[in-house]
Image (cartoon, rainbow, N blue to C red):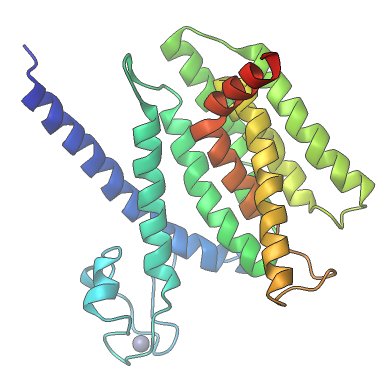
Length: 273
Ligand SMILES: [Zn+2]
């Protein structure tokens, strides 16, 4: 017999494990964000202080906590450690918690959880790399294709449901809009990396529902437009300087996942009324 106290303990353990794994993955993403654009291995060598080259030992490598304990400075040379490191770790932990919450349903866990955790983690790395370098590296984006196919197939096998129609429609919508803008602006309005990422996000959201994928696509453009206007108003960006679009594409996809179905249903009801 399962009591509500057991249920609460399971829920606490579930979120504790997901949040903890998210922090650890976030720590690895810091390495990815720093090394992948340089073409360096993410495995070797181990992390070292860029200032004094002293290796970073395990106790100074605990996500978020070590940065706080060290007050943002290297243990050996006191060189400042950028706030971005604990920020990426905390953000990834929060993404894992949010996706874990999304996956909880009355029927149990959504079988899409493994895929959205991978895409959410890749999305954090891609967003920061795009902000830094204005590109979305192939070594991260291209492996997401087989990962997405495998993740959707796993969800199909586990749930017994195969929403192929909305998945294909979602993929086509994202590819048509993002690819279309890329073609029409000859790559100035959108990078080719965005075009390569689009089918992955469109397919995964389409699997959830076609409405989710359309809402996600719109939300990305809305966020990008708002950020562009805000930056221009603050004089931080001229009309010609271009904002990387990857982070907005990914944030839009997150909105599509979390709220897309609800927004699409509300919109359909409003149109019909
Ligand atoms: Zn140092």
